[in-house]
Image (cartoon, rainbow, N blue to C red; front, side):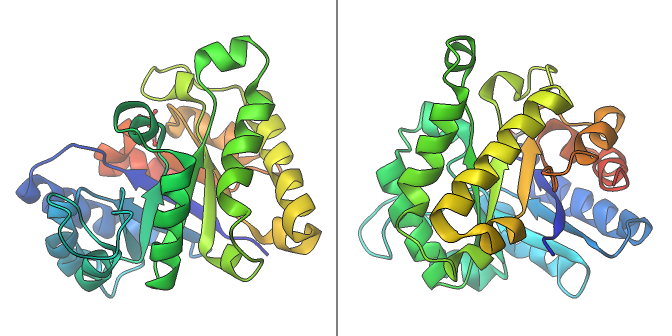
Length: 251
Ligand code: PGA
């Protein structure tokens, strides 16, 4: 059976002291959440080590928001998977639309990053999703198909045990415009079919597929009730412990 996951993506928000306080508040409230829901917080690189001091030994797992596409060496400003691992972090988000849009993240780079992350023992939350123009042109299935296949064709069924997919329609991120549960379910079911064609139905059935894009306590229940939506990747609402936990209580 696939896992239910609610993951907070803090993006470039909070100072280190603020992040530590937010993590403490999430841990304090986490007992309210049923134990079959995995809670993850993804923080800026600077926060990983101190936030790990707060979450280690609790049910809250730690994630990075990105990693380098090289293992080590003269790559000024980059952060390697071994560095991430050494902070205590268990996951990294990869391919977030903000990285694709603003920092030239390509599928080719994502293949390298995913290889390095999995080899280092990090689990990957791979983001896919169409922008508004692509949705309006009816290309959303093709875009999600290409982003999924271009990266995951380089990996095995065994690797997929450590990969979570997040479907995040770009037009719904931070805009307050959530995809309807029908729109989201349609793509989730489609991505699962793509995975079934690649790895077999058994593997596809076990992959957790998260929805992301203006998910909040008031709409999470309806989204999470869909058969192929296994949780959420939460941006804005993850910056308030109460809202983040409220979302996790929506299964
Ligand atoms: P949002 O962001 O919840 O603020 O829309 C989601 C994400 O980008 O992961």
